[in-house]
Image 1 (tube, rainbow, N blue to C red):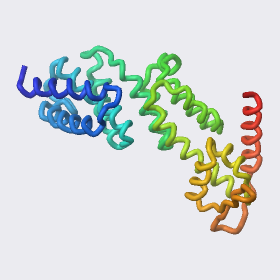
Image 2 (spheres, one colour):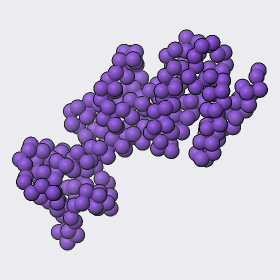
Image 3 (cartoon, one colour):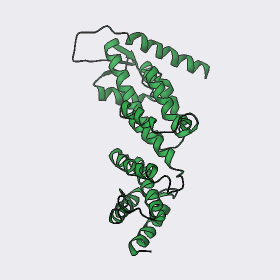
Image 4 (cartoon, rainbow, N blue to C red):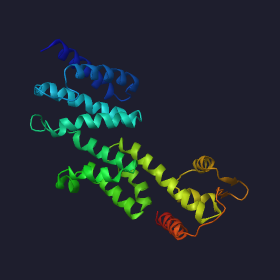
Length: 266
């Protein structure tokens, strides 16, 4: 065993222990990952080419990159997550016959699908689906979750997207779902500004999937809306005084009625 590989194994063991601890120090993990990526680069394992490395080297490199992908989500670094996923693609495809299946492959593929949804990169989402075995699309919980969410988005069933937070197959999925909900809220807000001059605070909270008044007030401030605390209403202010009649009025009313019916059922 080369000295470089032995040092990599020792540092990987330290990283793995820290990352899997109940309260990992993510800053330390980032430091370990940075050093390990240098080692992997020196051993031509970040993007292997030419002479095929040994299965042991490939396996260690794959596991380091998988931890790096999860770490990226936990520190909310999307570009870093994208890079780790791109590097893992080689291990999941080109070296699939040389390595045992990774238990982290489908959880990470599912996370990447959710990332694409949250960034509204629908064409890339469908391209990624084409590279997944058909049976996995139907049976694998990590793949079924983002596929179901994409269907909900196409239907405009935003309440189902919100409810999916309680059904995530792994806690890391919540990060991208929250980003997706932020996009949905802004779309609903834009429709509301055109459809209404004002809304009761309680209805705005229901419509925007907020659970507390302060969340609504913070969002209203970000959008530049006026809030009348006495009337408990939000008044929409737009730069364009010309109101455009669009069907969003009925859509919003339907969403409010649906939410109220759910509350009565509960």
